[in-house]
Image 1: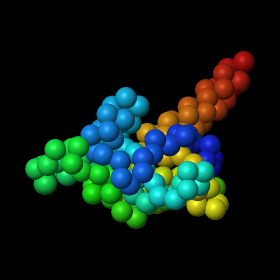
Image 2: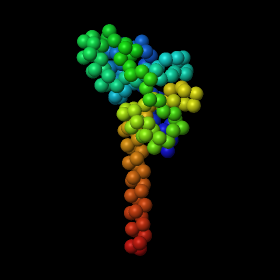
Image 3: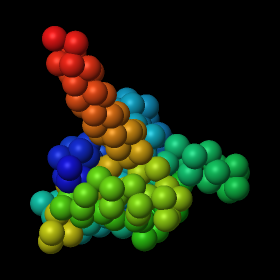
Image 4: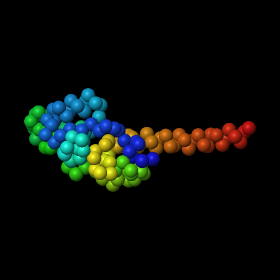
Length: 146
C-alpha cells in the first residue's frame, strides 16, 4: 500500500508567520497533534517545518513568552522528514523509525504538500492487514472441518 492512499488529506497547514496562539486553537479545533508549516505559493505549498503539540509546550516554557508573541517560524522543527506519496507503507515506517518521529508531511512527485502520514495511520493499515491474514487462517480451518 502506498503512503498517498493512507495519509490524511488535506493536511492541516499554516504559513510561517502564523501566530502560535492561532495554531494552538487550530490544532484543538481540528483534533490534530501536529500542523505542517508551509512556504511558497498557495496552490503549491512546500513543507518548511512541522509543529507538534509538544513543540508548543517546549517553546512556551523555554521562551517564557505568550503564545501570541511567537510565530510558526519561531517554533517549528525545520527540515522535517518528508515522505513521497508513492512511498510504500513499509518504507514510511522505516523512515519514521530512522528519524524518531511520529508524523511526516506527504508530498507529490513535484514536492507539493498533499497530506500527513502518522504512526496512527500506519498502525491502522497494519492492523487491517493482520485481520486479513487472520481471516485466511480462519477460513482454512472452516474449510477443513467441512
